[in-house]
Image 1 (cartoon, helix red, strand yellow):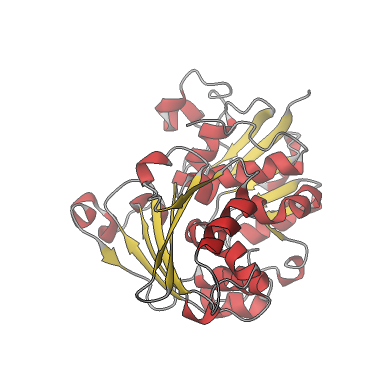
Image 2 (cartoon, helix red, strand yellow):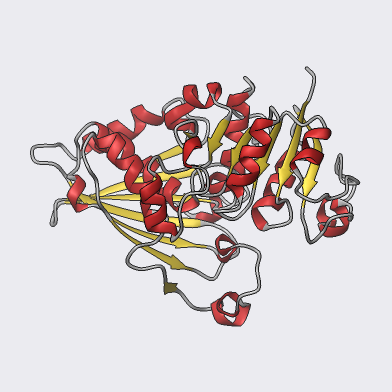
Length: 347
């Protein structure tokens, strides 16, 4: 099979580095472009020595110019760019015939007004929102396969949405009682100079941030509302924890009246029985970030608190893997009719 010519736009950040790690050795990918304004002209291995001797590691970073990217013959581009920046390049690449998998927030929301509310500026390409597919493969595999524009989900949302979707769809829990507590590794903040993210500031400490209205709430509530068939508003409490990568989320909600708690386990098992990357640990299963980092897996366990009538959902994933680069590659595989696990079979 002819390998698919692929570009990574914004390849020098943490998510870009994860995309490089996966795509440089993907059996059906030929990496033909990697962009970085800061590193333009340098070969990939000079910026990331870990990739020395990897296929295409001699490829030099280029400026993020749409014409230059299209000239490489790329059929698809992964965008690992900040929100507000990705949309302009996405439009230009779509106009040049490329498929686009955007890892920013620019196309995750269906409503431009909600985007403006949560991101503090008008949406840069509202006319493209109806074209984009929210790239959660376990929920929208068929739509992803037919789309030219994928909005890859955020890291926190993935860890919250996947455990909740089947329970909301089957009316097993009360949507008005959902509370999600999440803890993320520091790489989730991006590769940037920020005093609050220095080692001494983060090490041996845990802190909440982004309260009470973290930006990811917008896509979380959008997707949960679609699953429930009614408006869902939740409490979301994100925290920074002193590890490089990984997300652990504990989500609680009241069990709906008359529902057997064991229905929760049956629902999760049925929803993800054929999923390559969702591992359901069952009642009393406690996900651990060390078991999912550097992979595309999300582990989900659950418990029931009879004292409070609340279901406790536990999930763990790699914020750079299933929460970003790995999930984007999973969508890429669906877009091009490949095995869903291609290039992602690492444990």
